[in-house]
Image 1 (spheres, rainbow, N blue to C red):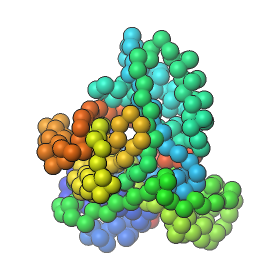
Image 2 (image 1 turned 90 degrees about the vertical axis):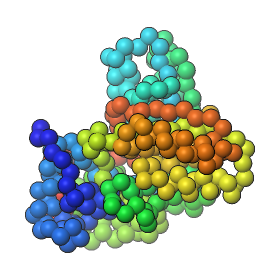
Image 3 (image 1 turned 180 degrees about the horizontal axis):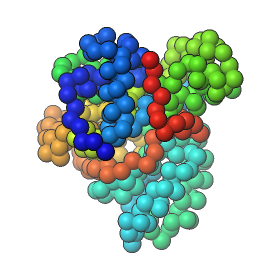
Amino acid sequence: MEDIKLDAKDMKILAELDKDARQSNNKIGKKVGISKESVKYRIDRLIENGMILRFHTVVNYFKLGIIKFKLYIRLTNANKEKVEEIAEYFSKHKKTEWVAISTGRWDIIVGFLVHNVNELDDEVQIVLNKFSKYIHEKAITTTIHLIHQERGFLKKDNKNVSRIIYHTTKDKQEKIDEVDEDIIKVITNNARMPLTEIAEKLNKTPRIVQYRLKELEKKKIILAYKVHLNPKAIGRLFCKAIIYSASVTEERTNDFMDYISSIPGAVWPQRLMGNWDFEIDFESESYDAFQDIILDLKEKFPDIVKDHEFCIISKEYKLDLYPNCYPQFSDKIKEKQ
């Protein structure tokens, strides 16, 4: 694997893919100032070198009656092989969204997408029985406010970085039919797949697929098309800050969410219900930079940050933003012309 360094054009391409991964190479090229062939070459090179893992679609599953829970597990008497075995088990589970190994208090973090707490409980009980001798401690949270943030560090100017906010309790519920769901399942892990290929896989016409996609976007069921980056490969550290909050007003909570959303390295700020109150996922330039952010938060929001913990994500096993979505259909990621 070739060791490459990102130049200014690579960064601009990544920023455009992070903003809208369904943009064509031609459209990206016009913004970056290079040909569509050069865009394709650079994207292919970033894929081959493990910097781009894939392109995924952000689905607002809350609108479809799906709830996001996270299970945190602290292990005991588990060697590296056992930790990886447990992580692999969760990775293959049909109801998991995200699976990662971390350092810190928690060894494994697992996101579940289910329809109710009883459904989650059934799955957790199976896990506790299967790996009971290795589980020292567990915690469970449910996400009630999640922000998908554009990566400000990809841009020279961190201002006007947009964000997408959705709430489990406030979003209007929507109904979709089997065709809509099939489109979502295809495009979740294949955000740059051309309309013609989606149509071929679903035995529909490109015109139908295009119309359905636009309707899903209009209803804010599909929120964005993003690039999934490997933080290590681009010289970043994937850190998770866990915040225990004191009792504060709604206005102060909103101020806090607004502030953490403005931090360039913050990619998934979340408000939770459960053992703690907030999580902030960072792709940070270094551990020291991450620590500086935590100290800044404690200084600016002493009334909110009652206590904190952190995890450093060492390996991600899964990121499927819709239940039972299809995997990438090819080892060679398809590129839009």
